[in-house]
Image 1 (tube, rainbow, N blue to C red):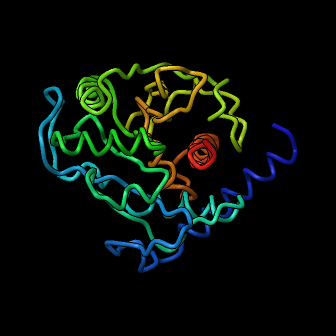
Image 2: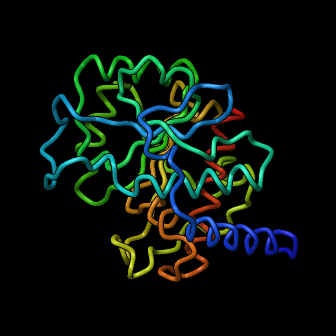
Image 3: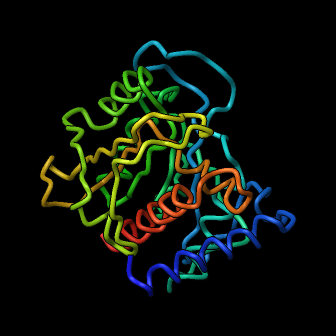
Length: 254
């Protein structure tokens, strides 16, 4: 890592430590943030419909994991270390069929291993992706893949999930990611698993736009939420934020 990049990473982590220590601002608890043309973090809510495959376990409101600390910390870093006009006083939680989703270029889904939806939800999410939306899937592992893949096929029946390596532009958009083959720290809830990254491309062509990125066997938001508290190794938090910033920058520029 060169000296400039090392300084930037240290500065990011110091900033996150300060932000994490502050009381949560009122806006992160609001049901909506007024649209003003800037970048607002969008978390997808799924609460009704059917599974695509039998789920590996059950539980309420999986889509709310790490809320609101994860998005608050990530957007603070994005707004303070890039030129992006990032909303740092609140975020949005939108259902899959909310028409407001089309106002926002990037959305993130937690726990797609337990993802449920109706046919209408699938159709609206398909429209969102085909019209330029970028979707981040995060926080699922092992056999939970089966439901995720089945649900994705309901959205994009012809989609092929392609393995991404470090050479793909999304991993170099802002921070150059040096290594992806690093296991989760043992105190991570997916400790010891090796993260894997997959992409869904327009027309299944890797030379075209990446419509969705899949973070499998990992949970980046855990690093965002708990950053600066000494819970995870600095290197793991570094990579978590670098990936998050890169995803946002890619979604804004492609």
